View 1 (cartoon, rainbow, N blue to C red):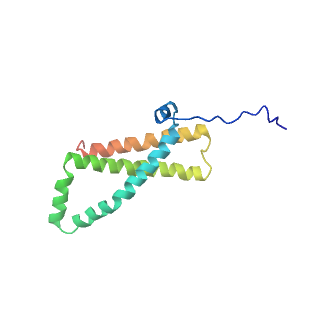
View 2: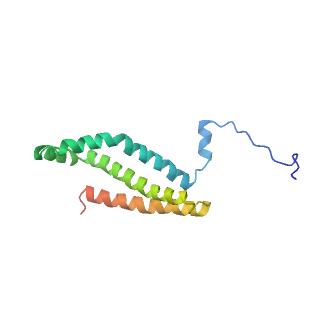
View 3: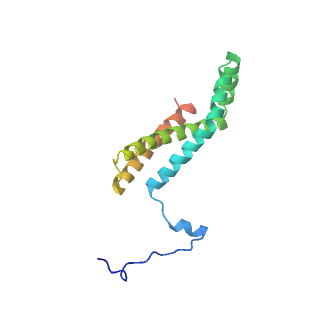
Amino acid sequence: MVDPRKVAKPEFRNIHVTDLMRYRLPLAGILSILHRVSGAFLFLLLPFILYLLDKSLLSEISFAHFQGIASHWFVKLIILGLAWAYLHHFCAGIRHLFMDLHIGVDKVSARKSAVGVFAVSLPLTALVALKLFGAF
């Protein structure tokens, strides 16, 4: 039996917002937050994307109009952001499915799989960027 006098009591920390920078979030935590952010980004923009798709498919003239809009550099950056959100959300979602099966749940495996998600999603996003901005 454990002596209750020797058990460490929980420590209360009165944390100010500026003190939060002292705590370092693990890579798996950053990945999880980005998974949620990318999912919310995709969910919120989905109606707008479907509306644009619907309007672009009305006729050849409307398609050419939207094709002209999509050739602007700022719109390409938005499309690249959507591509990153999709690729990151997809890769992190596969990671979460494996973790639901209790594969890679320990700390070392979780960090390795988080690195793997970034190692897959970021180069794929770079390939999309190269294609989008006309490198090939």
